[in-house]
Image 1 (cartoon, rainbow, N blue to C red):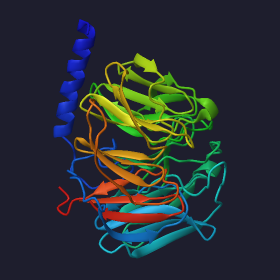
Image 2 (cartoon, helix red, strand yellow):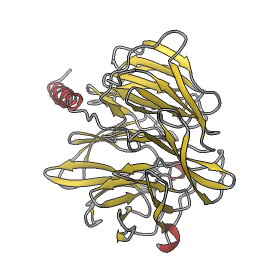
Image 3 (tube, helix red, strand yellow):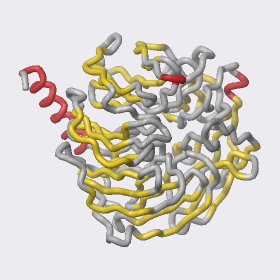
Image 4 (cartoon, rainbow, N blue to C red):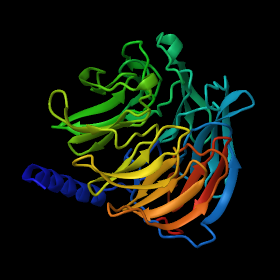
Length: 407
């Protein structure tokens, strides 16, 4: 290995080690967890051969919404009885505490339809975003409607082909949504528009926060580029072109210190960008990881993700963050879900098999596996207080006990 590569490897490893040590122990209250990176501070040990204990099961309606957990409540979205429904479940029993129903369309288009976005819990409020551009705030304890907006209609914004899919991101007093060419921000108390962007189609990924040189920004995918936006004003700080077939920029960008990882399916591939005070610089770009809509996780200087397009035999794959080289290609898991519990991977195949393995560039060796769901499973699971929440497309949601102590 030459000297520049060795220095890059050392920098990546030092940052990765400090990142694991600083993991948040907060609840999984939003898409991709407390730190918006798919990594939990909890420890998960191998379960018995018979599989992890199923604590309860619930039916939440058709869709792809993941689960947010806060204050003893689990929130998700589904399509039931010709309506988009936010369901709040008691985490102890799985019993519904309340449901909020809004008449809507299933929006079948190549796949089954139903909501794509995950609710976000902030304090005593849960925020939900529907595929046709409606956003609303509900009281987390009761489901009472606090405010709602039909943003796509009000702002005359073009809807992407498969509908709006980003989960609400809360930044201070703002709700930031991926709608328009570079997002939109609302006052989280009132729903009033604080700033907006152009009316062209957005991408499908959720806004991701990052800090660089004492400046706080959010990264957003439009249909054809990645933009960095000042969340206070909506001003675009820089743009990076990122074209994909059918404009499917769906997997969230991943922030790793002063670097940013991009990956898209439809044979687009991935890249790592070096952040600067101006436009970022490409460190490497290749087709070694094509994440259709499930963002990869980064641990210890290595990328772990699902490589392949929706509906194809996507595989689990590990890449070197510094170089983009493939370290190993693992089993076929399809376009399911992946998250990390400290230095272990939890992978949910698109056929409903759950796998646990150490995150290691040496190879993929499952420590435990279990069939936990049937049917299509394209939704990322959530890990909170020792419990894994996972669902399939028709709407069966299971709660599994992975660690009684949740530590």
